[in-house]
Structures are given as structure tokens and as C-alpha cells.
Amino acid sequence: MADIIQLLPDHVANQIAAGEVVQRPASVVKELIENAIDAKASVIKLLVKDAGKTLVQVIDNGSGMSITDARFSFERHATSKIKTADDLFKLNTKGFRGEALASIAAIAHVELKTKQEHEDVGTQIIIEGSEVKEQEVVVTPTGTSIAVKNLFFNIPARRNFLKSNTVELRHIIDEFHRVALAHPTIQFSMYHNGSESFQLPASNFRQRIVNIFGAKTNEKLVPVNETTEVLTVSGFVGKPEYAKKTRGEQFFFVNNRFIKSAYLNHAINSAFDGLLKDGTHASYFLDLTVNPQTIDINIHPTKTEIKFDDEHTLYAILRAAVKHSLGQFSIAPVLDFER
Ligand code: ADP
Ligand code: MG
Image 1 (cartoon, rainbow, N blue to C red):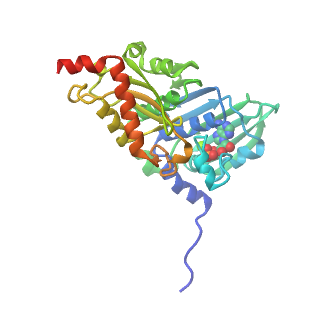
Image 2 (image 1 turned 60 degrees about the horizontal axis):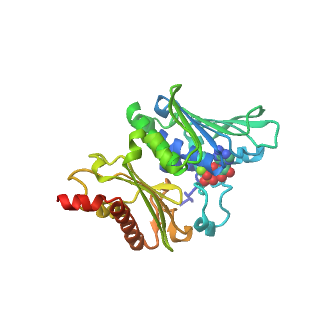
Image 3 (image 1 turned 90 degrees about the vertical axis):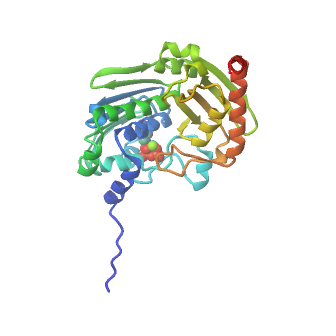
């Protein structure tokens, strides 16, 4: 028998990887904004057309890239953020896998413009389905603009699988909220089909929550602050009387990264024990800071799930911190009495 194993060409490998990293337009939003944050941008603008199906563009005023890096950024496993596997446990960047741009470029039309501060001119690159169509010198502001057009143009099955614009836009707004909440000191704006959806000035966590969820939110928030050796918790929980039937406003951030955790969610619910009416859900906005060596972020390509070394301790601290705050605001005793 002849040998039959072959290495997949890069563009095929990239398309396969894209299946994991890019599920829908909102995934592109997440990856591009995270890159802008990693580039230390202070102003980030998101432009979306047709719920991201036609265009997702992120413009930042961050570090920009050199000519060589601009080209290299689209290679798979090309990253400026880690050098060794050990670095995975000292992460202070959102990215590290070096596969987002390569994946996106494999399944969309991408236009990159980027310039570093000390340069007079920048670089423009146009890529379609992993193929570089154009690379030239352009006049462009310091920072980076990446426009992703016609997502899944070469994978009709994926394109057809996209949901209605209403649903896809909802996913985009959810990602935008998450990343904007995780980084209140960065100025964010979002435009859909040319009209402004959000304008969020640089501010603090409380003000960012209010700017996103409305002025009424302010009076609902109870501060939570706890510092222990293994965990710092800061943020807010919603007063129980404002609890809603939907789960919408539930946010955990671990080292400035939005994460989902049914286990930690349970810790909060148990802290609210008896305070919530049946069928309602507490809202919370909680920043958890832990030693990066005690978590593993690299368990899923989208990085929304992480593994904690000592989940049980975190659970206990979180529960106690929330209970304490609810008690301090004399919410618990009043409701206890009513029961
Ligand atoms: P990762 O973020 O995991 O490193 P990406 O594919 O998202 O991988 O990006 C590859 C590289 O391109 C990054 O490591 C970074 O050096 C560069 N890059 C991407 N986006 C930007 C940006 N907005 N500003 C500056 N550099 C960027
Ligand atoms: Mg990235």
C-alpha cells in the first residue's frame, strides 16, 4: 500500500480551526476587540452592518503593527503574547493562541489598516479566504482597523446556519457588553448600520454598568468587596427586590475576562438564599482577581470557561462576600423578618 497521510495545507487547517473560534459574527467582535485591548487601546470603536453578516469592523488607537507583523499576524500560531507554554500561567493578555486572525481570514474578506506611532505611514492588507490580495503603504491614523466582511463567504453551510439579524445582533451586543464591562476605563462605541447603539465614555465599573443598563440601575446596586489571600472580589450585586425573571444581568469577570461558571453562579444564588422570589434571578457584576497561576484558561478556544485550582475555596469566599454585603445593606434582616 502506498502512504496516504498528508499534512493539511495551511488554509485548510485554518478553516478547520475557524470552526472552533468563529461560530458567528459575535465571535469576530470578541476576538477583534480583545486584540484592541491587548494592543493597549484607550478608544475602541465597533462598526457592524446587518448584524455582522456583512461587516464587523473594529478600530482602535492602540500600538498598531509594523509592516512585517501586519502580514505575520494572519499566520496560524503567530502571536506576540506568549513565547513558552509557561507563559500561559502568567497571562495578562486576552489572546495567546495566535489563531483568531488566521481563522477569520480563512473564512471572510479582511481589510487591515495599521500604523505604529513613530511611523508616518501605515500598512494596508487585503485578504480573502487566507489569500493575500493586496499589501500596500497607506496613510492611516496610529492604531489598527480591521474590517471583516462577508463572514463564511466560502462555507455556505455555516453562513446558512446563522440566525436572524435580531438574534445575531443580540449576540454581538452581549459580547460588546461583556468586554466593555470588563474594561470600564476604555472608551467604547458601537454603531449598527450607521446609527449609534452605544457610546460609553472612559469611567469606572459602577458608571459603566449604569451607562450600559440605564440610570435606574444605580439604585439597585449593592457593592461587594472582599480581599483574601487567594481571591479579591469587587463589584456589585442587584438588590433582591429588583431580581428579574430572566438571567440577563449576570457577569463574572476573572482577571478582566468574562467567564461562565455554573458553579460560581450557584455560590451567588446560595448567598441570596431565601431573599429571591421564586423564579427570579439575582443580577450580579463581579470582578474576581486571582493569581494567574491558579487558573487554566486554555481549556476552550473561546476562553469563556476556565478551570480553577481551588474552586471550593472560591465558592466559599464568594458566597460569604455576597452574603456579607446583602446583610450590611440590611436587606437580609428585613426580608428574613417578612418570611
Ligand atoms: P493572539 O491574540 O492570540 O495573539 P490573533 O490572531 O488574535 O492572536 O492576533 C495575532 C497577533 O496580531 C497578535 O499577537 C498581535 O501581535 C497582532 N494584532 C492583532 N490585532 C491587533 C491590534 N488590533 N493591534 C495591534 N496588534 C494586533
Ligand atoms: Mg487575539
